[in-house]
Length: 182
Image 1: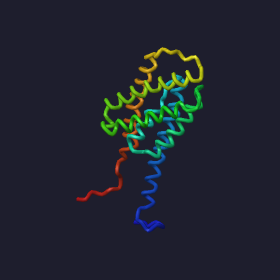
Image 2: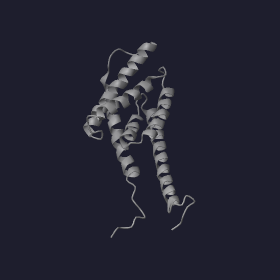
Image 3: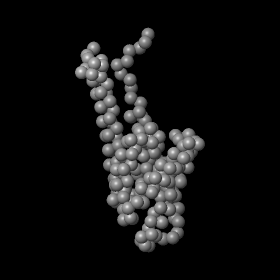
């Protein structure tokens, strides 16, 4: 048994284990961000980052959600032609809807997520129409359901995949080095 300079046995092993988990989280969210940017290249106007933000909040990683949310907001705000603030309003609405609804319902339930993403898809369309109207960009007054349904399906599929991969690869680390009590 080695003693580190803190006087705790195994402190360095615990630190290196935490360092490995931190690297996995950074690599996972960096890959998620790159795939989201790539997805937006092929499907302009669709949001690929909101499911990741919801997975982080569901898992209790609030500080990571804050930093990744800020990064994704800056990426989305800089890539569009609407005035600054649309994505901030959208992400604020996302968090307000999630936290207010999760106070009453189970936050990891598929029905809850379907209703949340349906609400967010409509909210996104409404915010875009309002902001485009305020800027005089000539957005049509018709409320087309096709982009809303495409965004809903995209949100739900991305959430299912991200939630599964995040919890499978990062949340359930095997415990090593533990000896049985028997």
